Length: 235
Image 1 (tube, rainbow, N blue to C red):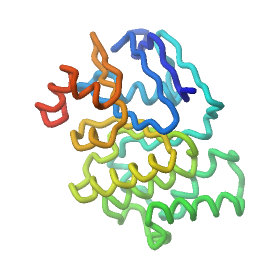
Image 2 (image 1 turned 120 degrees about the vertical axis):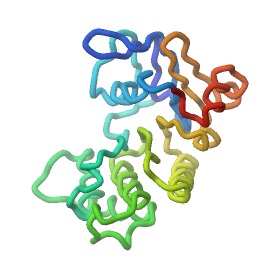
Image 3 (image 1 turned 45 degrees about the vertical axis):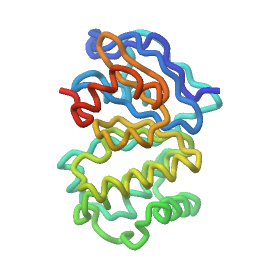
Image 4 (image 1 turned 90 degrees about the horizontal axis):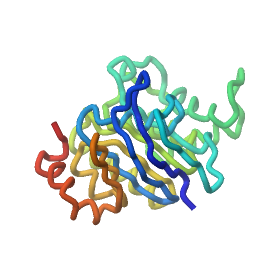
């Protein structure tokens, strides 16, 4: 049974739709890559799935017992966020709040969960370091560990490799692949052509005619030709 099913979904702001008639589903174990031109509504879709804003029309159905606290989110980083004055441990640990709400102290279970996710991301040795002093790749590992503290089924990522060098980018994709193979469903907005090889499904958002299907189906579709001919990023 699908975790999320969207039918005739319309996205936009202030009552004005920027894209309509989106139809797709996300099942356990999927790796969905969301692509489309700038302003097509990719980030808006992520925010809508997270209930950070309302859809303009259509329905979003949740199934297979999916709960809000089983979904993690890694948003685009801003310059201010990259300079955040907190330790790696503090940032990762804050991700556990999704499970129990705010408390004046963290429980033993929350601390154990944070330690486990830091180990998975290979950042245990960075525990006491200040986040602002880390490299871009290290920062993304920290944020992914934080998101995993909140997620047990789905993780949503919005342009996660922006600003990373090629080596850090490939390492990050490798981490996502491992998580997906362990059962975490991945939903990622990206303009990076390299990311396509990891996806099981693709949602190409287009104002007039969007596409949803498997990666193989997408590569046979004319929409993929535009995406590939521009190196992944449409203008």
